Image (cartoon, rainbow, N blue to C red; front, side, top):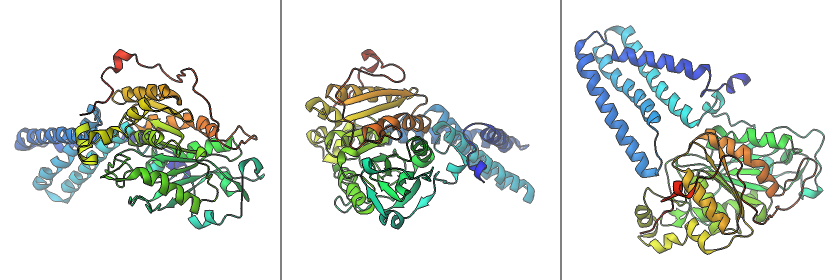
Length: 463
């Protein structure tokens, strides 16, 4: 099954086959010898499907502030249309064979819609991701907590038979201080952790989007493959990556703040760090060797914590994050989280903090997909504000839109910079402690920054 798990389901023969079978299935559900079905049932069903698609699209855009591309709506609607059309075909169907074909056609129509939505977002890029293959062997808390010997990084030397792959730990991180009820976290532990003598390693806390789950980074983000690739070129060294839960549920949006919606910021700083100290003896305790990062909601959260708690997270990765947390509008956000107190909300928003404080010891990466028109202006605005506040930051654009196509590439692109910043040197020359650089001239790795005219009106306003 090893070769099968690596098969792409967002490119190649699999999605092509699904498309052909799905289109045939939808046509079979539409084309019936009964005139009433063709001229009454089908038009009414199409109209109902269009209305449902528009309502769902509006709900998503209002609730999450994310635009839904027309292509995603169209393919999703195709799946719903097939499902709805199967009902009258089943009622009018004669015999077991005809009804069985109708059920099969409905399934193929739904699979058609889901396949194309998944192809757009690249949430599950391979067969392995679809069946929840995390990309690395698993390990228990007990196996890690009772490691024989741990030394500081400068004292460590790799053994000759150091492994090539990291392992994945699943663990519940309690909200002892915050009271936040989080879902279980996933933790990537690099090969060096399992050497007879292990080095203390830096930590990256990496967050998913909203909607989303911690394990999204293992599937769409291909985290294990990215970290294994880096480790194989660096004597088994790579950051420990804690895929923490920053939302509490797949659709939750507590804004990554300490507010009426929950104390998520305290959870991601105090509770996660306390758990790591108790459970992972290989995790570095010096917070200069800790970083926070994430995609979309997680990217916004990373910038929030980097600006509100720079001593806890002096290094960050903002991948397609917004300029401020949001429940759809500033007023809705302020009312829900702070009881209408706009000043309290403004005091913890990144752009306000970056305009009023200096962050000479902080460093970060801002990355966005070239096709991400909705988020790109916010990322550029945040980058410029961070740079003006004295942060050592850089901006990059990668292929793709607001999808895992961009985020997987962004993580792979930024891992070498991140590892060096957190104290992991080149192969055979590990260093201890984070690399702190002062602000330097603007550096663009991919693409160019939009001009100010293109970004006019992108900064948030407060009521």
